Image 1 (tube, protein in one colour):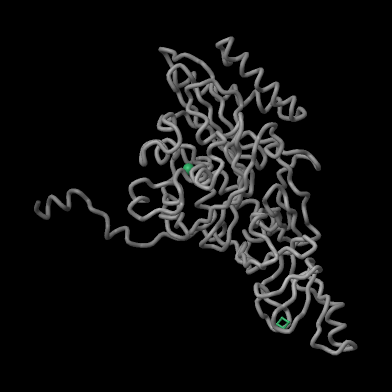
Image 2: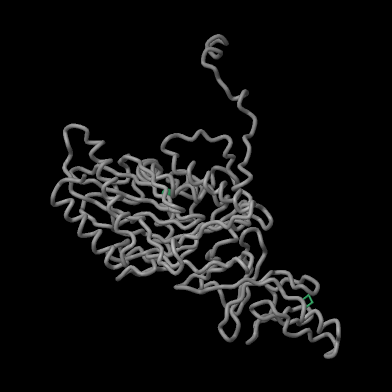
Length: 451
Ligand code: FES
Ligand SMILES: [Fe+2]
């Protein structure tokens, strides 16, 4: 090869050596950052119940160092790590009936941060009395629910109601809490849910079959934006069936999809529900955690996956603890998203039409952050107060034999009819909604028409 030949091929390494920029607005989530403030307006899971005990545990959420513990009375406390006396870590604190006692000089704090005792000071110390009246240790409210501990880390005058999703009440469902830690920014992990195409490649081809064979099919991609709910559909033709798989994001960080192992497109399925109900929470700018329930049962995944390995495979396609060689041979979601670096440099991306979901939801988050800065509170997931939030993450497989002409259009039409029908029934009472959706899907299939 001579120089002329090299030049003709236009190698561009040198031209493109500049490191692209980070999308600072959505990547930075510490206290007092715009995105951090936005995220602090919502309830998030912060730990598994099983991690909380009378041994204090250090956790970091949204860049903040915290300690979580359970008092002898069984109350959960989530407080700032640094003792307000002389900043000893409360992870060395001793748990009592009423709260946590700092190891250094014995100050005792209740779960809401009240300073109950300052035993080294004189009982009649004016200074200590005044401090106890006026000052508290930083603490956050918590709700323990079904194996996950949720907290609200925002201003108390803005505390929203605790969101209840329809996924909490699926009959016959067994939900098991799990956590998966990621060594990268939260947006990288969140993006995957609005990227239905990656399931065909990462989970169906690059690493062999991680879930089921049908995943390898590249389907028709559609996106829906409905308030703060974003849906990414990948509708695949599997022989004489059409498989509508819907990934779901409810802002800022609630995610669901279809089943990981229970759906492959070969058998009819009517409104199967998500294998996980999951939140992606920033630990700091370079780490995040997925806290979730894995869902098993007739409308979820097979119960045989109800174990740690099963949760890891549902979450990322592969188990977490593997050698580099294994990871290289069969990358899962963790490898795909952590490989981008601890904070992906979004300005170096080249987003395509199949990335529409990602573009749309990131743009919306940026907008909501800006509105919050201008004083407008971000929308909560409930349409009306007290409402159980309706979700749409699912698998539906219908028999719909291939058409000789325009089959791709036909496949797309099925997705849009299924979704439209579901949206129309959305406000029905939950059980009725599910029963109606399932019966309508049956009817559509029987009729063989999907208009
Ligand atoms: S540093 Fe905690 S009581 Fe002194
Ligand atoms: Fe994935």
